[in-house]
Length: 123
Image (cartoon, rainbow, N blue to C red):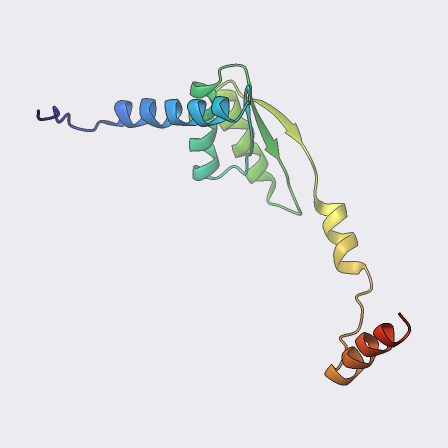
């Protein structure tokens, strides 16, 4: 028995992907989705699919990190267009703290070997 071939259309593909997302999330016990919303095309597509898969249960997380303010504005436009709630988590301060934290000096192989062998000797 041959399966009927239907021509893919943007609407069919969109429905297929939104259904797939909903099925995968529900199969894992979820009731909605959370995703990063950067203001780019990819995250705008995810916002649209998420809103279709989980109307009222999709959350876009905007995470600027010394970013161009236009990126956040674009993210908010996408969220508004698809009726997706958003939260903003500014990653600038944590990023700066990580870069400013002292890093341990790299160990030479000899120093690393001594550290390993001395800990075994005292055990």
